[in-house]
Image (cartoon, rainbow, N blue to C red; front, side, top):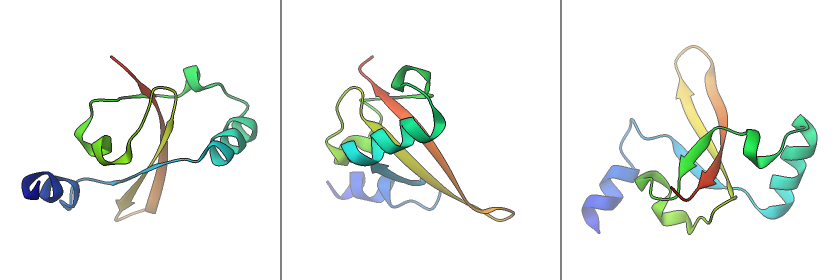
Length: 80
């Protein structure tokens, strides 16, 4: 487990968070999109293994940037 934790806290791995159903609905309404239209992330991706993600969940990814400060990305979980 220590090796897994080290991978998740590595400086090059951005923060991954699973959105609540309420936040997911708000995101879809704000951008007028469906889960199918979001970029994808595999349910098997090691970066989300600790989130208990399920297919059709939405993952918020927060990346640190030296020029933009922080950037936020959203991915729809797929089971492939």
